Every structure is written in structure tokens, then in C-alpha cells.
Image (tube, rainbow, N blue to C red; front, side, top):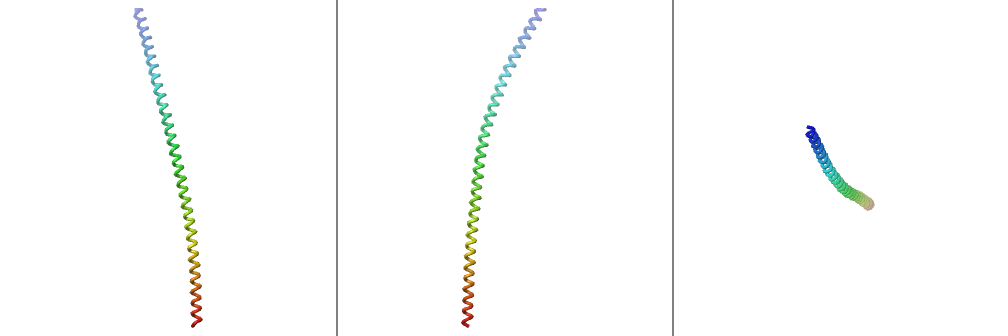
Length: 113
């Protein structure tokens, strides 16, 4: 019986060694998978960061274009306001001159009568 007992102990040790080796192999496989996933995450993160920077750059460029557009609109409003003021002043001067001429004509007509 002692021989059987020794044989069983040896089988248990062999089984335990096999199990430990299998576990080590599984751990190694899982470690490699984790490393691969980590690498993919880093790569994806880098790609996303690059795209985010590209979008930010395009956004900033759009903001500059919009600001330029508003400046142009402001300038056109100022110029058109100045032009309108000039036209109104010219018309006021013409009306004043016409009024003066009408008064002169009326005075001349009154003097003739």
C-alpha cells in the first residue's frame, strides 16, 4: 500500500506541475493580449488626439474667417453710413439753395407788382 500511496503522491505532484504550467501559459497569453490591447488603445488615442487637433485648427480658422467677415461688414456699414450722411447733406444744401432761390423769385415778383 505504501507503493500505491507514493504513486498517488507522485501523480498529484505531476498534476500540480502540469496545472501550474498551464496556468503560467494562460497568464503569459493573457499578458500578451493585455499588452496588445494597451497598444491598440494608445494608437487609437493618438489618432483621436491628432483628429481633435485637426478639428480645433479648422475651427480656429473658421472663427478667423467669421471675424474677418464681421470686420468687413462693419467697414461697409461705416462707409455706407458716411455716404448716406454725405448725400443727405448735399440734399439739404440743395434744398436750402432752392428755398433761397424761391424766396428771391417771390421777392422779385412782389417788387414787380
